[in-house]
Length: 214
Image 1 (cartoon, rainbow, N blue to C red):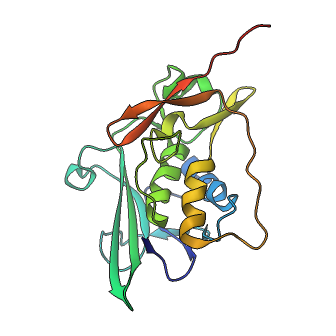
Image 2 (image 1 turned 180 degrees about the vertical axis):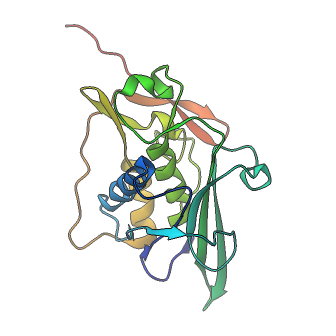
């Protein structure tokens, strides 16, 4: 159990990765908002835009796109964390999230047909950001239940022609376990057509639900 001493952190966003006017800014803000909708006391503050000195392990929380495969280790995105020990407990002191700039990402969540879960070519940025931000607040991977900390791309709910990522019940329970319940908690209620499909290594896999006629 490793937590932040304060239940809120903010990321410095890379200047090139999240340039002014970029739709990825809005997508990152949406990922922030989805975590801040949960009943957990933990929240993500507004990103700090325009950082030109991005580097792992430099003492501040940062988020950016990179082609450095040494950092990415073959993953579409990865979260690095640093922690220290004090008073018999472990505390986070830095979290950095790196996205693979060579992948086909979509900051848009509509129409959902262009996203990979629905046969499209683009990985939804927001679901992956929610997953990596889950690591940043202290969650590990999950393969026992439907969870954004498993296969994040299919952890979505749809309405009309758009698909939205969200934190979900199981990851929210983890955040509440680590940080407690917010004094004025949101209630997360949604209908999704994806369900738990089994374990795929340390990740849960999700499969479409079936709609039966009478």
